Image (tube, rainbow, N blue to C red; front, side, top):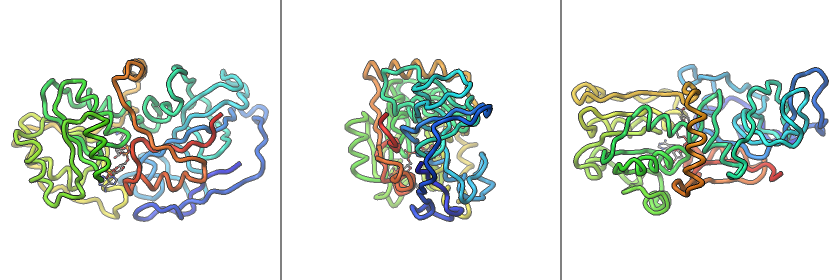
Length: 345
Ligand code: NDP
């Protein structure tokens, strides 16, 4: 049974050498009697930026118990039940939920697993696009809560999305287009900018790494200002957005990936614009909106089946590739939702 363990606490940018893929004893494909556990075989693992905060001891960022050195990384994934124990699952059933980064996982808390309802969708979508988890709301659900519920978008409003080609950002842009908004995305490479304008239907996009004065860049793309900013990155992008917000604008604070690897978070200096422009900024944790998930799941499944949503995934093959896949999130090497395919069946 191969598993990915944290070698030591991560300092600064994560590196592949912060992890180790170890092979342990052959797994007994049976749940220990009376344990109440479920044994699953991992198929897809989801790589998520929030997992970085669990790899060090930063209390300001850590909202979920840390991984201690030597422990197996865990996150959201799709798996097949090998031994259901005494649970309601059946052998061979497909599930998603919180699983270990290992080929076989003994899940001691089967309530964290959910049966897959839309088996006609690609399985990987349950490791991101359509998943929900008690740790954090996942890709699609976060995009939905953060855009529709936090920002109350209206037709013809001006929307800006950062990390726009990523797992969450690509969906926010498409939701904005479905609402009839004008949407511009920023991303870290020309290839991503091309995908935003071509495949994902953004009205415009730019490579933020090529812009020395983001404030001026935003003025160019939004001469009339921004009604809605969906923030995935924080830091200097957020700072540049503030003077460009329109009166009564909304900022959805989804994530601040530019800050996750810094020893000290950066200061935002121009918050006064929130007052003068009467802008509302609101953070959210999608898993706190649990009651909205069933409606979201069906709505999202419908949009996908009708071909109204395009979803880009970046699938690394084999559990050995999991550390590199995770690191991709912070170098920007991922094109869309970063996943690891552990086994096809
Ligand atoms: P992505 O698929 O967008 O991957 C991360 C991307 O972030 C990279 O591809 C890179 O793209 C960009 N990035 C990395 N470092 C920086 C940096 N220093 N400055 C600017 N951009 C950077 O990840 P997700 O879609 O899964 O997550 C996006 C954000 O949403 C994260 O901040 C995450 O923590 C947050 N999140 C919040 C949730 C919630 O419930 N509030 C739930 C899920 C995610 P590029 O090449 O464009 O730089």
